[in-house]
Length: 173
Image 1 (spheres, rainbow, N blue to C red):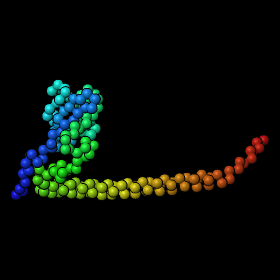
Image 2: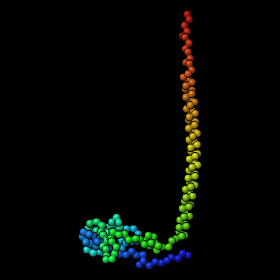
Image 3: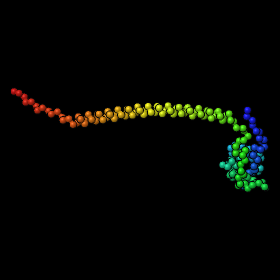
Image 4: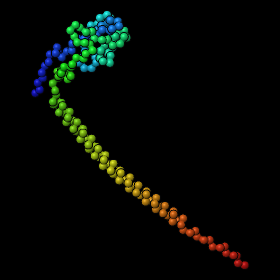
């Protein structure tokens, strides 16, 4: 029986982040999703609550007014916004889920069967290719021999002197 260690959601939940547009001053507080570049909007400042925010290439929100990417709003005592904080072990791997040894073993077993099937198919194809190559080589040999024989006969015929014609016989009176 596999036992799982339960990690409180508060430990795994990423902290809320606040972003501000440097041009129009609107802001948004988000909470990042655990996978991908998605985020959940917690609150909006300086814009209507139903405002849509895009997701930039770095996964940060885009200004709804079209000013581009919004920058993190540093809070006193926090690190410089340009500095990337180191990832924790829980953020690097999904440690909340226990490793499924049985599933991994069954997947390896399935892959082994698949590889074995492909090996048998390749071996059968190899034998079929060898038989086809032998048939092709035999046909090429027969063609080559027939071509040489016909050439020999043609040249022999050219070398034979043409039968001389007998002089026309004179009519007898």
